[in-house]
Length: 154
Image 1 (cartoon, helix red, strand yellow):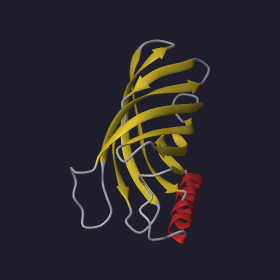
Image 2 (cartoon, rainbow, N blue to C red):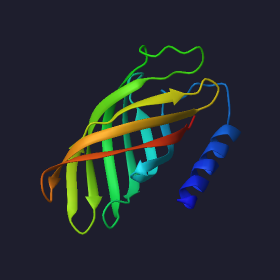
Image 3 (cartoon, rainbow, N blue to C red):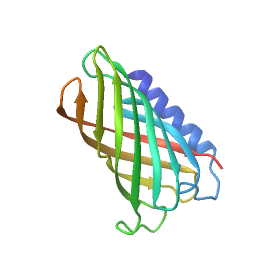
Image 4 (cartoon, rainbow, N blue to C red):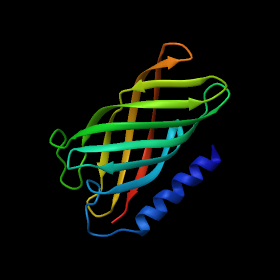
């Protein structure tokens, strides 16, 4: 747990040391970390102003622990929450997930979240939940989620 906190602190320091006057969170590629279930590296690639692909390469701490991957298509709604600075879109989408444990797990999930895009920095922070269904090794409901931060490259 202490290592996760150090990674978060380092990501915040790195992000804030790279401040500029561009709102780059709806363009290009963002890479950062996600902490929760699972915990690891998060990436997001914007297709246009409202749509993006995102994913994670991470470690799941459930059961005996396992390598975890997910990939999502997500749609953003910017007009719901109006802020005086920055942007805070709500988003939803669909995706697939895989866990490489003693039993391989494959399923689908629905990411639901909110992100904050800083006005003066190429950063976003987000929180999301991902209700889903595992199809292997047996069909069952599953829930995951996390909080994270990403830096957008210009």
